[in-house]
Image 1 (tube, rainbow, N blue to C red):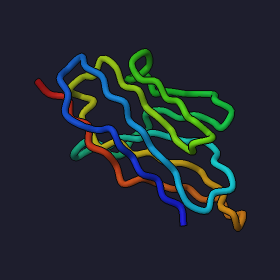
Image 2 (image 1 turned 90 degrees about the horizontal axis):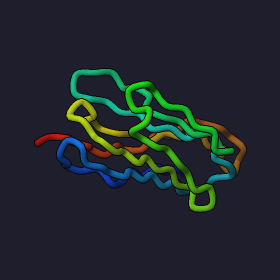
Image 3 (image 1 turned 60 degrees about the vertical axis):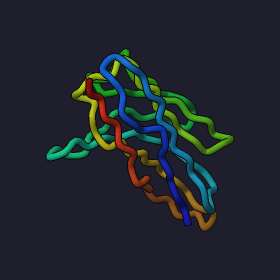
Image 4 (image 1 turned 30 degrees about the vertical axis):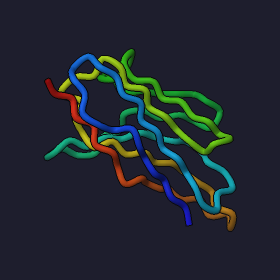
Length: 120
């Protein structure tokens, strides 16, 4: 069984930073693209950033220049460094990954989410 567990959320003031982490565990053969999504109350879940297994990254416009996604393949972890946070960044942040398990089945997995609140 595969699990993704996020950590690092919290309450910060506008302009401050947070670093989210997400660790994958279980019977994993290979991890492909990894993603960070977020969902604010009343809104749909939206993609924030993604990183391919080789390190290529992509961001949505509203976080470009402020957020950085990275990964450590040896540790099976993905990170989201969030700088210059704004109140509109307040949301539950989820990591997701396309994972091939030991029995060669590829599926998309999701973490349980971590709350990020930006408020003065």
